[in-house]
Image 1 (tube, rainbow, N blue to C red):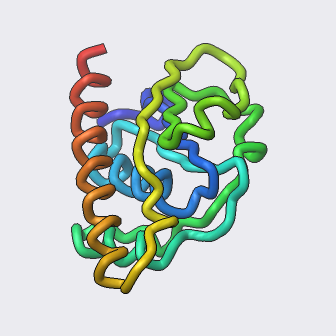
Image 2 (image 1 turned 60 degrees about the vertical axis):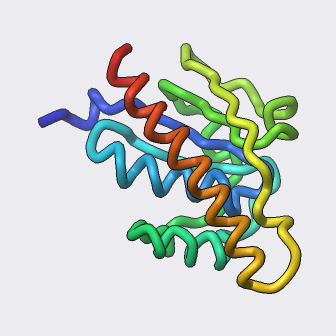
Length: 145
């Protein structure tokens, strides 16, 4: 069994820390088991989007206890990986101390989806699938390093 010190520390960053980074945090925590210590944050944190919570619950992942956080909370911490999940944050993301691998995933923002709840849920499910595929690759790739 791994100790806390051997876990790879991962931070997901997006603008509002309401959908994409929250979903990625929940997925990596769920599928990465005890291998990762996972966080998410935003440049302009707001709230965890209710439809993100609902979409994740459909796949058996509970993110109701997660909350929106600012990147400033993490500026003094060392990470193994800092993963930006939206294009605007890639350009504005602060530099964190220490040596870490910066990764960028260009993922559309489901929080800006319009229409009925059914139509917005369709967008969220598509984004959830996109993130899941990236999480699976990330877990596989990080175990080879």
